[in-house]
Image 1 (spheres, one colour):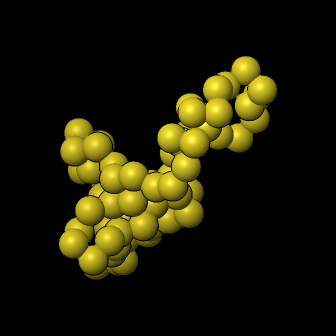
Image 2 (image 1 turned 30 degrees about the vertical axis):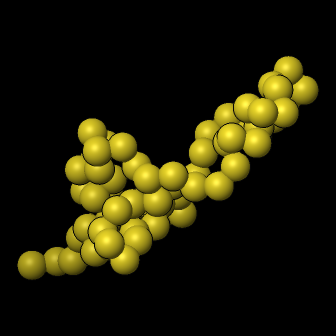
Length: 65
């Protein structure tokens, strides 16, 4: 049986924590930042967990993570 390939785009965007949850970075922080408030940009900092409804599809893209 051949090995399953990891989707390279998913490998760049997600990482699995020790507890099994999947970490992702926040969107809407790349460009057109002048119209966004300072509070909004500050709250987009850092990383958060992938939502439970999307966890199965992310795990399918990363079979060995």
